[in-house]
Length: 137
Image (cartoon, rainbow, N blue to C red):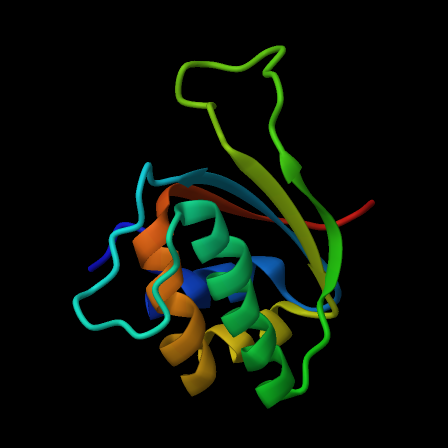
């Protein structure tokens, strides 16, 4: 299994914990120094940042369209300084996305378009990733 893989057991456990209603997902992303695409991958990007924002995000939105889900990008930006951060908190980018439900996110992640167009970029360009579900009070 890839280090950044979301297996069915983890997704099932998250669905049970999150339940119904809106969910906001926080992504903490550390990019590879250089992309590591599988041989012959036709849509390889020259660097990890473009692999993420052009390749992965482009494939992700294609999967959203396929399954009829419209997520809301709340925030995307580079980490510029950690005030109370440890040595393992050196993230490159932080991305926050709101979904009407975790089931909507799961539909995207389970789609064939996501597997074909987005996932290869995620594996190739992300060195480390935290994916955290939150809900407003």
